[in-house]
Image (cartoon, rainbow, N blue to C red; front, side):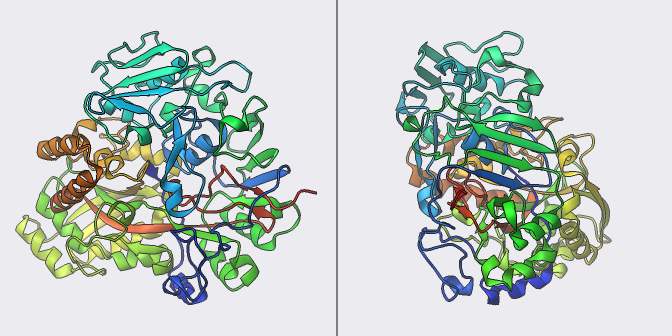
Length: 580
């Protein structure tokens, strides 16, 4: 899924290492300020802040932004996906509600099991549980899941996960069901209301993980509202929308037709969930630090801002309410490989050496909140250990960069533009300063976060450089490298994955070959080798592996960073310690 740029954090935060800033244990076990390399942990012994919640009460989520898409077909950004699949809609399978490695395991959700493969994993069959219902009491049937999968082909509903388009044996020009055309049995069969069969173009051994995505949630055709469906997706989960004033306030109440007996993952502890989207980042931090009144029952939706981090770290009571887990995402400097001079591979290689990643790291909080990225695949996809491909010093190697630029025909450098979100200006300025040292002049163009994808995803508007990143949809490199480097996925507009517009037929073929390997260990080895091959071509510069700092109120229980939701709090099991 696409990664939203984290809020900039002051360079002085690096000193927080000595104060015990840290992340949830990757094993869910307890650690203290004297363990985990001195980084410490803010969670209790089981890796969860506040213990087990009680039923009832109102949970408040404090935010400064609207959700870009709650339509399950179009929901492909974090942390919006966490909101959708944990509170509003269910999928065929889903991830366990647990911190650390346990949270990487999948469980049946709407389906009775994790799917039955046949025909060498080119066909997958799922059976639905009994008694599943929508918020209005109507039954959930297999054709509703087929319908939502078909919607992901619709050009009128862009921006969502494209796995169905990549995997299904669907006609090349199929354009979704909004004009009445449905997929045939060669792609999806629905022999009865409780059975759905997917026919794939090639073997996909991990398709049981693929169907955790919101593309595989049910949408009733009778409730179709096209581009407006995001305003009120029909709930199959524990909560339904009561009111939604976009950009201001979302109120969720219990879906009385959701059956806990059929859903072992979502606990639905609060009676009501209120999302306040009208706040400023500093105001969110101030309220949660003060921890007064109803704010004791609140959590932050957005990252802690730099001006407030020292207030948190120097107060033991507040620091104990801070969650900061590695998000499992790679931020990167994207280069438009179709735009001169970045169509020159040697220029792109020069950028690997020119970027000062230490300066970029400092602009976003230093080593307390960021690790320097040295390859595209994050450590969660490289057996837990980072891979350093080029062995370049973290501060870069300007002399080597200048040499490569001269060899590429740019001894005096060049000028280019860089697009980033308004919140990413400090990071962009660190890149700008580093590139200036090798003769590259960069003009920074800041864009509202809600409009950035429309700029970098449009061939006619996309500049030479942009700052973005990618997070795996589930723990497989198959949800990472193909999404951002498959040249066949490139389109002129609404280009959300391969922002580098990198297209190497040999890489495309290798992506297909690896995806067809049914031995997952062998596939992982092949993904690592391909990662190295793409690094040599340098379509982008990996920058950082960031953590996500989130603050919660003192009456919050069941809070931890989920390893799949990019370090966001898992909304499946959060609630209150006590209810008055």
